[in-house]
Image 1 (cartoon, rainbow, N blue to C red):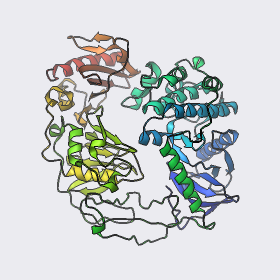
Image 2: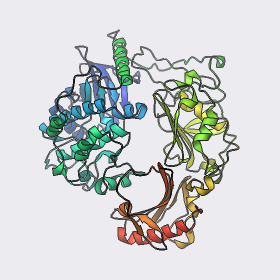
Image 3: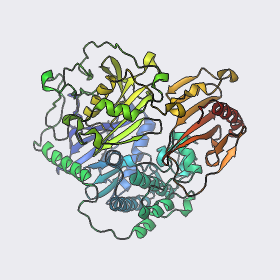
Image 4: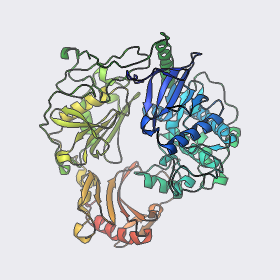
Length: 631
């Protein structure tokens, strides 16, 4: 997907004709362009408001210099740059492909042959990067592109020369990188070497093999704690890759294999015309066709006119159960498009707004029930009943139209995660909605908010509470399934009742009622952040979380410790997650052979030690356990 240029922007940068905007972030944007030889390039350009920032310009120049040093078959080669111009830019070879995180999110874990190709390609890329005297420092799924002939590593924005003795990129002690894919050295803000990238490679390969980071936790601090102190969860990794990934994830940097050793371990791989799952290659082929169509007119540049009349089809042409979305971000163009075309419907069920199209008056006439009425609901049963037996063909898209053909499983917060084919749908009841800050309209009387440009919506909680019901389809390309689900769920909110097993489950427990406020005069008022998370802010902050994670698959018997009054907590997750934090976890019950229900008490205070805080956490946990339902 590309965005058009505005009419005031030049369609040319250096020797390159701009075709559109591929994406943008806080520091800059990436443009799709073609060079004099017809080759496609991706041009990175910093935002205008940062041009007067000498420090930022210096950082950009440094990124250009580092990127230009990297070569190899599995990186995106730099072809041109100009750091001295009024608006500095960097051009790299544009690679049609699918980001690894998107491929795994939408299609599931990669099969073993594809994993071996991925591991070999990334090891080759790291060998090239390290041979240039560099450390990437941010190897993560979003920075890996699955191209037709193998993976490519991109984005050297925080790469650093090995053993660099010059001023650091960040303040002393700052953590640089993406938490789930950092090395222990990065998590501890210690000096990093090329071995740090190998650790990140191990985490990335685990995610590609299982769908999850080997150190995944409920928050970034927990994740960093696991990276530094816990062993990786590799039980779900296919056996042919488990030894390799475990070697990459050793805590001691010197004990990890080098990229060359990884290549020797993998050996010579068979030549494959299509190394990835078929849907990935289908999308790559579609991108390639679109690129050819985009350049059918050599002089064409995507420019959005100052004013554009948006055609509105009659409501009779749109099935009432499958509302056509008006995207919050305004006009989006497929790469193949040669003109801006936007469809918007005059709908009664869903009213979404475009940036340049003011919404018609909409009045919120309904509010979600209180949390006490929503806890204990069987989300999967509610979702199946609300959707009905079949989905409209236009809504199902990549998924099976029969709801019975979907795979349904509960989430750790008693939500529901369902999938079929290339589609995925997750619904959470009483979920935190702080990231859903863009108002999208009103559906069946309920206020709907949206998370950025994602096809993720929230049915807002009553009285501006920080929780609601969230719907996420893990895509930005087509929101029809998400919007259809919002429409169906808002039609079926009233009359919800807890499931038959709710009274014996933590799903129906109010976490704010597990701790007595009066016992903590320094704490603020209890705030329900979600149906199963409660916080007490203050000099010493407390958070209580109830969850239903999967049981750890391990042949080693779990050790427990008694913190008093017969309350046992698991020994492997006892203690601090940082110098000024303490975390305690109590297993309430097992649910079959797959899940367990746990209570977590987390205490933090920047002026107190972890040992001191654990003395606070223990009586809190004992009090919370005494108020749990009978089993």
